Image (cartoon, rainbow, N blue to C red; front, top):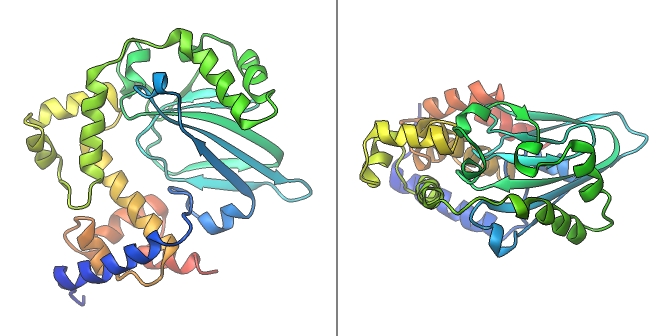
Length: 286
């Protein structure tokens, strides 16, 4: 395998990142972002200050496939729980370990609230890990049945009204702020920072705790392990960059993301996406 030095690789990748930062953003985590943008619209809105201890943002998606064949929307989610309000699919979703696929047909929309990593735990009586890979009743956090919740939120005419309705439902059930959520946010920010720890042991050391303590913390508040979280963000970043540019050297990308070599990146990527990074990148050109 042709070797790319870390210095030259970082230089070339840094220039590509700078170039991409000047371009319109594509939805992060969507496996085929350019194709998706032709058939689905996505909006994100900030939460009111009183919700910021628990939630990242509100989101709305809308699609119109009238007269077309149903299509599948595939997403690589981050380690966050979501409260989703959508006809026949309203639920509280735990962290999804693999690629999430959703079948879209006709015309419709969905409203969601993304919890901060760790932000769902104060609403629950047990660890967030109990919800990983599962969808459970939204009533756990809203106290309302699906039909009532859908009428209150999806019955609104505009996005602003939907946000107000959702926050009105959730506000009476807000728990007391939990300082551990802030700690989790700091740990996640460290994982996502360029050059941050790429091994769970190093991450634990950066926060002055043992690996076992960090693992217990993630089980309780995030729902997945720190090792899984590090790998998920690395692969999400790889997918995002490869979908946006065909100029990124794969060896440099592997080095930038903390992989031992290009082959290790390719192995992780193939296990999750079913194809090698180069194949995925080529598919985005069509």
